[in-house]
Image: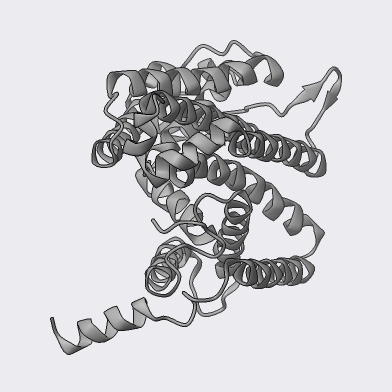
Length: 347
């Protein structure tokens, strides 16, 4: 091993952040992210704050749901964006009221369902697909699971792009309606933000009830020692499958919200890179902690949107710069704080 490699390894093993108690890091990280968020929002004004918080709510639902799988069972899933896309496309196909016959592009049926009629289908379909994938590939070992989820992400994107009779392919689906309660349509940004935050709160509550229950304690035991928990008669694969399905259903909810909020989706929103970014959010916040997922999502959104206002960075390079900065942050975390900001475990 070279001197440089030894130095880097030694620095990672005894980095100044590794020994800091989790509670202290949690307080420091929370204060820093909240101060950063408040300062940025005051700088940009109310309109941008509403948009930023809506983006945060959607990413936070995804991060919290993925952490159920990655954090509490130790299974690394890189295909979560596929369930997000299933929820989004299901909402778009069922609820879009666009008249494609007047356009010189792919035409698809438009059932024109109300948002709340389509929403249960979005959630259920994402869960059913996850159940099917889990049953077919029931060897939920770490290496197999990563490959299966990776393949699922690629196959999902291929379906979104090539199943033009339903998805319109690269043309995308537009005129996706907002939620409505009777005659009250949530077409205002404030109203939709409130609805998105309610959905996030429900997801957080459900996840908290799961992880604090006896079911959640079994999940933690599975992560700690899968073979030992199996000795006591627990069907480990059944627990993993249940969490996988629940997580997918939450991702389907996030996808439905995303489609309704943007009113337009195309396959580019569900590429494999988005899954990598989502995993980065979970690692950044910390594994096996709901609050860490929320912190990671907020930090990611602030980083992503804040880079748009850097005077020396051309707008066309914002996406690439975001990936580079997030990659550097992950490398630094692996060296100095591998459990993330407030995580309980290392990846």
